Structures are given as C-alpha cells and as structure tokens.
Amino acid sequence: MKRVDDFRLRLGKQELVPIMVGGMGVDISTADLSLVAARLGGIGHISDAMVPTVSDRRYNTKYVKDKLKQYKFNVANTDKAVVQFDLGLLAEATAKHVGNTMAAKRGPGLVFINCMEKLTMNQPRETLRVRMRAALDHGIDGITLAAGLHLGSFGLIEDHPRFRDAKLGIIVSSLRALQLFIKKTARTNRLPDYIVIEGPLAGGHLGFGMDWAQFDLATIVSEIRIWMAAEHLDIPLIPAGGIFTGTDAVAFLEAGAGAVQLATRFTVTNECGLPDEVKQHYYTASEEDIEVNGISPTGYPMRMLKSSPAIGDGIRPNCEAYGYLLDAKGGCQYIDAYNREVALHPEAKKIKVLDKTCLCTQMRNFELWTCGHYTYRLKDTSVKAADGSYQLLTAEHVFNDYLLSTDNKIALPEPG
Ligand SMILES: Cc1cc2nc3c(=O)[nH]c(=O)nc-3n(C[C@H](O)[C@H](O)[C@H](O)COP(=O)(O)O)c2cc1C
Image (cartoon, rainbow, N blue to C red):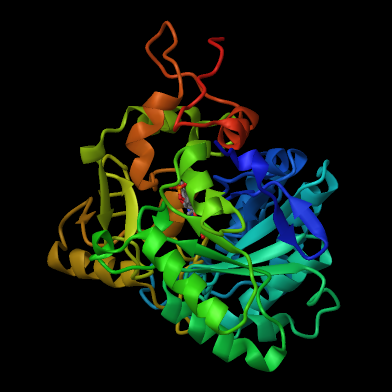
C-alpha cells in the first residue's frame, strides 16, 4: 500500500515532497507555517492579502495608521474613489513580508506567495503588478495566482528578470478557466509551472456558484488531465479541497496528480495564524455549523463557520484604513449594502448588514472564520486536554501524518 512519501513532485530541476500547504489569507498561512513545509521538503505558502496590515502586526510598521490619517477626511463619505494605495509603500510592505520569510527559509522545499487577484485595491493592475514584482525582487520561490484569475497577470511581470526562473502557478476550478488562462497568456510564451485544481470542498472563496455541491474534484481533475494529454501539455496538476488523509492524497497521486494542496488540517496547528480560541471553534464545529454563503463582497461564495462574528455585523466600511477590495472605481458591494441599511434605519445607533460583510476588517480581526468543508472532522485529528480543549498540533506532525499514513488513519499527537 502506497504512502504520499512514495511520490515526488518534479518542478523544473527540483524534486519535492508532493505536499503543498495552501495560501490562507489574512496571515492564516503564516511565514512560520510555510517555513515548516519548506523545511520538510514540500511547498508552503504565505499570502499577499492585506500585506501592509500584516506587516504592521509582524514588523511594527504603521502603514494602516498612516493611510487612515491621510484619508481621514473621507471616512464619512460614501464615495471611496479617492482612497488609493501608495505603490511605493505597498512594495515596501511586500518586501518586508517576503524578504523576512525567505531569509528564514531552511531546507530543501519552497515558499510561494498566494496572490489574490480579487484584491483589486482601487487600482487592480497597478497594485497587482507591484505586489508580484516586489515578491519576485525579494526572493519568493514562486507565485500562485488565485481568486479571480486576472487573465493578464503574466503580462504584468513578463519583463521581470525572474519571469522565467520563478515558479508561477494558477488556481482554477474548471477546465474552462484553465483553457481561458492558457489562451490569454500564450502571447508571453510562458505556461504555468503547476496548476492547482480547487474543488468545491475547499476553504476560502469558491470558484463555483451556489450550486457548488453538484461538482466533484476528482471529475474536474480527470477532465483537465484528458484535455492536457490531448494538447500535449505536461504540467503538474495539484488537486485541492477536501483531501483530509494521506490516503485521500495517495488516490490523487496514483491517478497522476503531481502533488496535493492542503489547508484545513493545518488550521489547528500552532503555526497557523488564527487566534488559539478560534482554533477551538474549528475543532468543535459539527457539519451543521458550516455553510457556504454569499456575504463576501467579492461576489464569490465563501465557506465559513455559521458562528463567525462577522455575519450580520454592520460596521462602518473601513476603506480609508484598508480598502483592499475596492474595485477600479472605488466601489465595494459591502459599501452599497451598508449604505442601504443606514438609509433604511436612519435613527439606529447600530445596524445589521446581513447580505454582505466588510471582508477586509473582518478577516483582519479574525472575525470571519472561513474553513474547509471537512473542518468538522478536525476533532478526530487530536486529543482533548484536561480542561476540555483540544490540543493544538505542530505543523510538522500534520505534514508527516499526510506523508506517512495509510488506510485513512490519522496519527494523534502525544498528549502534552
Ligand atoms: C482558513 C482558510 C483560508 C483560506 N484562504 C485562502 C486564500 O486566501 N487564498 C486562496 O487561494 N485559498 C485560500 N484557501 C484555500 C486553500 O488554500 C486550499 O486550496 C483549500 O482549502 C484546500 O482544501 P482543504 O482545506 O480541504 O485542505 C483557504 C482555506 C482555508 C481553510
């Protein structure tokens, strides 16, 4: 019976353990988590979601405070078009986050950055260009383009000296999205080095509609594999979403996948950036406590715990401080929803906004608990301490469990 450790991912000249820990913003897949994956010979991800904010927390910078100061005059204004990111400071924040992570990297694996193209930041092309280029400048091993696949992204870094040597990958949820991307980027004469295929059971935003339950990861992977073979394209495929045990992973690897991308199992590790008390909510969740809803202002369905404090919270939009989801015209679906509720309840001190959430603020404050479908199985991966709480795991323990387990077994931690 095979184990994940019997397989290797070939990326260019490199041979890697076929385990990729997926990007989880905002700073849920921390530098520490990514560094464990790299040390053990796999691939870890940091995330470029709200990097200036992350830098403030990690490196004592003041990007958020300074931006709020600069745009304070606009806080009560419903029009946010004036709120722009300073591209130089954005590059500086990315340089800090990426540079510090890469300087700490040890071992044979790689650290990539998950770059969410839906973070349009009131200047989609310019901010994405700066984020990707700064990451390449500061030594990131690779970039995974996610959430809202911007078809011109390769073009934004085409003239960068590392364009052909850094690993570039994309996340898709359908054959059609992959075909579109390959067609649109043909001009750059550069194919992705790997393709993450994210199915409907993943955490974060989904690349499906509210009919997500009709889709199945293995079927999508096999459709893509057949098309790639017909096109004579040889690019590692990396399925993601609901791969909960080493045995689940082996099934995909035996069917020809290059590696697997995993996230949910790592949300209850010490290295994961969620606060410890939130990790306990993940452990104790039952299947009924998890939903896919439409409250993300990106327009994509998102999976989360129903008990997330963000749901219904009608806080004032915080775009002057954050503003990561402002589109090219300074709009965001949450601003519209919030203004509608304020107009409907002019006397209310506190309003509720049920249909949308202020994603920047809620993710920044760890009040929106996005999670994978199988979060309700996390309780089976650990032991309870004397006080009734579940024991957090080390990322190394979870990584090695995927690597070595057979028969769908999950190794429990030593009680400690
Ligand atoms: C808490 C959490 C946050 C996530 N955030 C992101 C993200 O910011 N960008 C992204 O591309 N995927 C994100 N994902 C998706 C993961 O990277 C990964 O592809 C997927 O969850 C794998 O499925 P699994 O969680 O069942 O292992 C997130 C997943 C989780 C659980």
